[in-house]
Structures are given as C-alpha cells and as structure tokens.
Length: 80
Image (cartoon, rainbow, N blue to C red; front, side, top):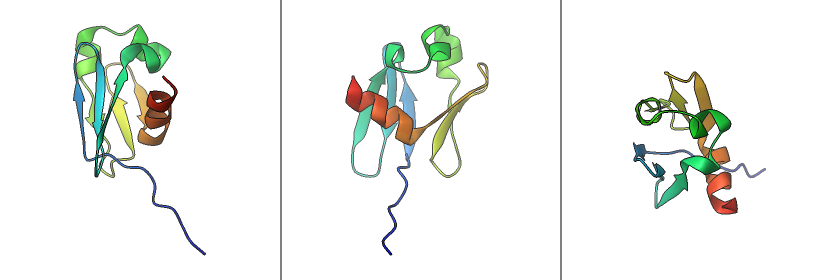
C-alpha cells in the first residue's frame, strides 16, 4: 500500500500583500483576501504574528487564535 506524504512547509513569510509558504522544492504565495475571514479582517500586526507548527503542517496566528493547514492554504492558492 502506497502512502502519500502530507504537504509540509519549511518556512513562512508575511507581507502586507499576503503570505508566502516555503515548501521543500518551491514557494507559493496567497493574498490575505484568499485566506480565512479572520485573516481578511485582521490588522497587519495580527497577520505578522504567525508561527509555523513544529511539523510544518500548519500555521498558527496567536493574536487571532487562528490555525490553518498548509494543505488547505495551498489549495486556496491554486484556486485563486
């Protein structure tokens, strides 16, 4: 049985325009307005306080109590 490796990030960067997610072999960018409603309504300070989970599977915004998976964010980036 073949298993697929979950999508994980090696790093993240925030900017006024959006979020950049560093993957193993590429980077993807997603605008804030393509993220969650909490991130759309957040201040720049709240958006900048982002932490990549230890396993690289998700991102946590402590000032917003928001958690999003890397896989979901990558899917949103592909849609928009």
